[in-house]
Image (cartoon, rainbow, N blue to C red; front, side, top):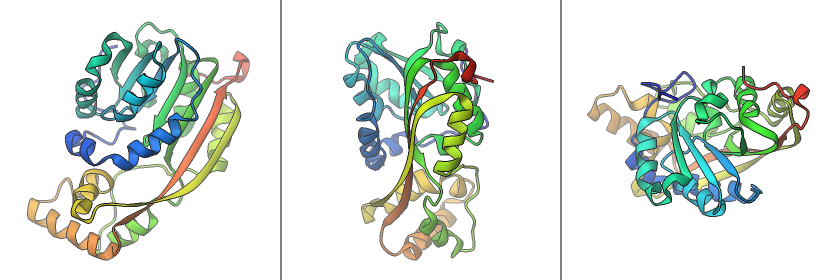
Length: 269
């Protein structure tokens, strides 16, 4: 699959991946918890859908010690960091630069279905969850497991109130879905054994790193066009409006299996 020259419409654009890697302890912690729900078979091939800088992918490769991982991300800088981190795993990991809304068997190399899909902190950047889940079903073998977590309805509402207090709105696009809508979409895509739930994950950020965290993760698309001085004043104001250095995350958890019945599976479209 020739990599696209830029992330597609579901991607958030490129990132400051090295800074993200340094401050992404919360995402790594969540990823460890999500990974614990994955039950890989011996020799499994697992798609990491939104691998980022590879911190969770590294744990996944250690978990499927005799298997393979396909590390996919829409951001070139994230994949570059992941390649550096995961170089020691050699040909057990394949890197794919692609948008999840373009996902199809041919994109994953030999076109063979994967045995499982893992994803953390990614799906809320994808604007069409109907198509997303259909695409994931299309690359999963019958009975293959999907284990994921992303932002849920109600995610970072307190932070957004702090942003609005400065007179700004957070631009960009994201989808914080409800469990009910997610279950319906998974069923429509042909998944079974579905478990979907949310939980609050208030996360305290080191005050010395809060403005960097906001700039790199939560408010990246808002501050990107600002001049440096304006950006610094804005981030300091948001941090002050926030009060405690706590991000009010709400996470959407997904565990499901692709139907064994091909008629029931929507597949990639």
